[in-house]
Amino acid sequence: MSSPIGLTKADVRRAMVRHHFAPCASQYDAFDRLRSIQFDPIAPVGCNHDLVLQARVPGYRIGHWQRLAYDDHLVYDGWDKMASLVPFAGWPLRRYIYTVHRRSFEKQIFQDHKEAVELILNEITDRGPLMPKDFEFQQRKEEWKGSWFGPSVTKQVLRALWHSGVIMTAGRKNGQHVYDLTERVVPSELLSRPLLDAKNAVRELVLERHRAMGIVRPAAPPEVWSNQVLAYGKREAIAELVERGEIVPVDVEGVKAHATPAFLTLFDQPSLEPRVVFIAPLDQFMWDRKMIAHLFGFEYVWEVYVPEAKRRWGYYVLPVLFGESLVARAEFWCREGVLELRRWHFEPEDPGPKFYGQLERALRAFMNYCSATSIRVEPGIDTNIRTVARAASTT
Image (cartoon, rainbow, N blue to C red; front, side, top):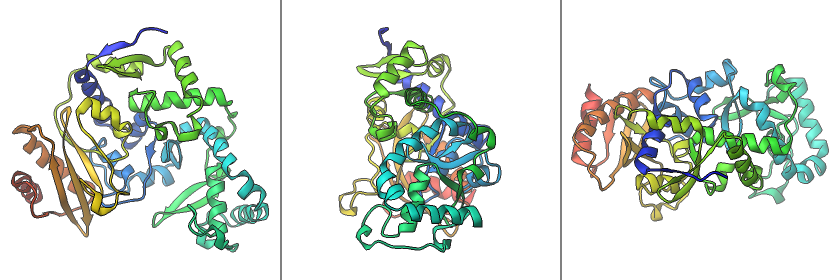
């Protein structure tokens, strides 16, 4: 195996910012770059997937992804790293994920509740797309109370079918899944493609992670590797991808990783014009937080599930990028046309005077993204930030 290429933190920061945040011409271009976008329903100022898109697609507004998914049928609402929005072109490869997931449900659902599975599939076949509450078959098992999907046998079976790729999300109503048969959601030309064997599927999925992130540590968190889906085969897959020249070993000032050749070409590109970007907590840029800490000196914990009394930064705090530095953390909420800035924490290094002009511009774009007409800043937030927010709100 070839020796790793030595890279500086500064060079990798510049390449990462260009890879992730060079503006995209369309939503689909963003999906093509990122390979998938993690779906999360928590929505203080749009959902995670909305925030990922607003950071890359000028003029994007909350919910615009739904047309791409449910009207244009260019992306589907399924599974990749976690629950994700994925370009349909990536569906044949990700069928392997469904085969792995099915093993977890085989006995409890597909064997022990075979009749319920058949009844639910027959209803969808005969009646078309349905929400869980719309099924005539409704059954509960009180001993399942407290489990991940609750005591409803109907919901448990639907989730097993969804995680196994038998049914898919055909749309959403008030955020809730509307389920239909996979063969009525996936284009026929994709359905007919053969299922990849495990070795080839794992290798290609590992490559997808590198394409999405640009540079990845082999020791990146398990969720980057879809937990059990890739965990056991990623070492062999990485070695094969290196042998094939599809990823390249690198050493970033003492940290081992692999980068795609396309990512390495970004080292020859100049820095982007500095702008302020509000980054989603589950953005690909943030997937490997230890690497972010190493490169940017920025320790980040998403504190949504941390008890309030133990939170250091806030409930739903977004990293704030300026140029090639992570300079602050901000918590926004948007309700009834008012964008609330609830928390703002600067990092120790002064971002410099040019930051504030770019922040005003970013806040105006963020207001447009969430359809806000004004900004309200909580007491105690930095005076300069308050001034900029007032200017953005009145421009």
